[in-house]
Each structure stands twice: as C-alpha cells, then as structure tokens.
Length: 117
Length: 115
Picture (cartoon, rainbow over the protein chains, first blue to last red):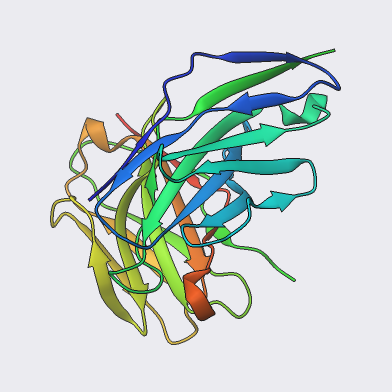
C-alpha cells in the first residue's frame, strides 16, 4: 500500500520568488514513481513532473524541479520564479511499480498555493 | 493533439437515480482510469480499464461499474445514487512506456451533485 502526506497549510509566495511544496510518502514497493499535479479552480489535473525511484538525478521541467530524498521518503516540488497563474491546488501522487504498468495513483490531500502580485 | 475529454461537465441527480459519465482518452492512449474527488480531498482511485476489461479496482462498492469500448473510450456508471456520491469525477488516460514511466493525463472532470 502507498501513502502520501501533504501537511502544509495554505502557502503564499510573492510573484517571481521560489516556493517549495512538501510531500512525504510511504510504500512497501521497492520501485515506484512520484508525480506532482496542479489543479486550478477549473478542476482539471495538470501533470507537472515525474520522478522514478531509481532515477539518479532529480527531475526538472522548466520552472519545476523535484527535490527527491529517497532515504527521507520525501519528494518536494520547487517552483522557481512564481507567476500569478501558479495559484492553484498542488497534489503529490505516487504509483507502485511492482503491480505492473499503469497501476493506480495514490494522491495526497493537496496544498493550496497563492501567488501574491 | 486532443487531450482527455469528459462529458457532461456538470450533472444534477436525485438520490436513488443512476448516472453515466463518459470519457474519451488522449489520442494514442489505451488505458483509462477513473477517480472520485470529494470537496477538499485528493482524488481516490475507482477502477482502471485496459483492453476492454477492468484491470484494477479501488475500494468502491459494486454500485460503481464501468465499461471500455473498442475505441478505448470509457463510461462510468453509478447506480442507486447517494448524497455522498456528490463529487468531481476525473478520468485519466495513459499508455504503457518502457521503464514504467507512463503518466496519467486527466480530463476536466464531471461535477456530480446528488440532491
């Protein structure tokens, strides 16, 4: 079984500054994938970034980077140069690999990010 | 390249009724997963369809059923609706990739309100 924990209260960041959104996880799978999604008020979940448990380097996608610390079971999302359009809910999710490809995603409860002009 | 589409966008039903939600996957994807997202919570996995069969199921009662068609589109059916079924229903599609790096891409969701 997998578990994702996102305990930060609503986060605020000034436009153009960087912000870190925390995520810790627990799993018995030796191989797994970690994901971050953004959900604006419209409701659609937008994929941001992926990190495999055996990837040698931390994942980066444009302004998004993932600070992956396997021993601590954390996968924090770093957003650099925040923009007003980054205001949304952010969800951390994981998928165990040993049950095969395309298995279910387990999500955390999410973190609300508000970017101030 | 069309993304995941869902219909309808909003739906209002009364307790005891039945509802059908529809999903068309992203072009080239063959796997469809359904999630229920209650207000203020993260999405919860309902089930996943691949090759027209239910491959994996979450902790949802049999009132929740689904189907996948030969063109990979999918339906979610919920019978005997309860007030607690009110939620955003999200469909996600994916395609197996080498090394298990497949990513699920989500549609805009269907907001269901049960009165």
